Image (cartoon, rainbow, N blue to C red):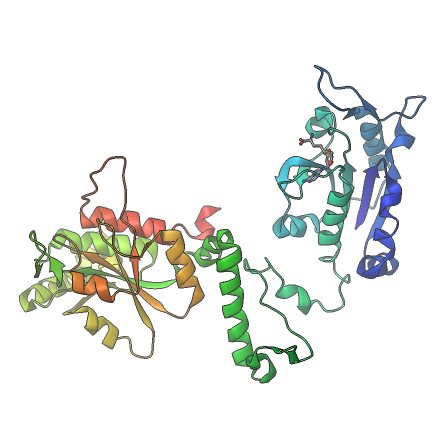
Amino acid sequence: MRIDVLTIFPSLFDSFLNESLLKKAIEKGVVDVRVHDLREYSANKHKNVDDAPFGGGAGMVMTPQPIADAIESLKGEALKKESRSKTILLDPGGKRFDQKLAKELSTFDRLILICGRYEGVDERIAENFADEVISIGDFVLSGGEVAAMAVTEAVFRLLPGAIGNVESLKDESFERGFLEYPQYTRPEDFRGFKAPEVLLSGHHENIEKWRRQKALEKTATIRPDLLPDVVMEGGAADIKFSIALVHYPVEGKSGNEMTSSVTTLDVHDLARIGKTFGAKIVYIVTPVEDQQRLVERIRMHWATEERLQQMDARRSAALDTIKVVSSVDEIIEGTKGKTIKLLATSATEMENAVSPAEWRKIAAQNPDDEWIVLFGTAYGLGKSLVARADSRLLPIAGASEFNHLPVRGASAIILHSLIGRSKEKQK
Ligand SMILES: C[S@@+](CC[C@H](N)C(=O)[O-])C[C@H]1O[C@@H](n2cnc3c(N)ncnc32)[C@H](O)[C@@H]1O
């Protein structure tokens, strides 16, 4: 790759290019970085590169002529045939630079980086000469040189042959959507602060597990904004979950715990909603035996009747996820060896309730756990069930005080906000 930097302060790059891994990469021919003094391209006899802004205002603006001429002259130097090149203006008003963009840029054969100074660069450069405008963060530097160094540094290390140990790139922050796990080295005990024992155990499986856990915890605490993407990767597949439509224990009108009746419409719709968001199983919880038989009959009817399967294969597939159980405990007993976590939902605010994003962070911390999202019928889940849930979700709030939604509507909204769309579908 060749990187051409356009700047009015070329000497700022002297030591940057002559130290450490970048120096080695240049020596090995992995990357060729050339720094050009923009003043040399100025058509002005005083070699000026800036002028007062049209319309008045403080400071000076970089004129377009030296920059445009430099770009054209560099592009005129043929690299190899079919080389892919990108001209980038560094500007705080540009697209935010990140690891994904660094990876994308590393696939080009040539980058031309334009460093602004003063109040910035005449807009006609961004509009007509640059392919992309990039910012390295939401802060203002005095010039684009440090930004150009940041882009060069992030990009060159991704080039083949730049880094001796390619493995070391694999686990780095942002590579898998997480921050990197914490690292430790000798001594084991530094002033009484001990390195984690598991890292000294030599047990690779445990070390891997610990590192994944710590990377998740660190990301959840420091950069929770990264997590929704992580846990949604591949859609619901990343959070293992089932849903349960509970008919006992639920609340009656006067707050008493009671058993409600199964509604066939609920069974059909919950199955379709669960299937849409990737629920493993759609549990119908009722202790009433004839109602259990009713649900089982609906399921079997659609699962075994060939005529129905041909008529509506999608509905058959959805109903096939139904499982009838007499209680929530039966769900837990039936999933031995796995850690089951209960998430309670309600139209009224429950103690310590969390938002969907907060729940995703909680779920991401222990990716092996299996969650059961509980939906109540009648006047909502019974208090005894809410009390034993591992997490409680904030109620759905609409535009008015009224939020008495039917369970079929509420479950669709809740699963959409909890699980969202799969990465593939977002594209
Ligand atoms: C003082 S800044 C100009 C800021 C401009 N007036 C504004 O408010 O957006 C001068 C130059 O520094 C560079 N620069 C400053 N902050 C940057 C950032 N966060 N990312 C990339 N380049 C930056 C740009 O090249 C910019 O033209």
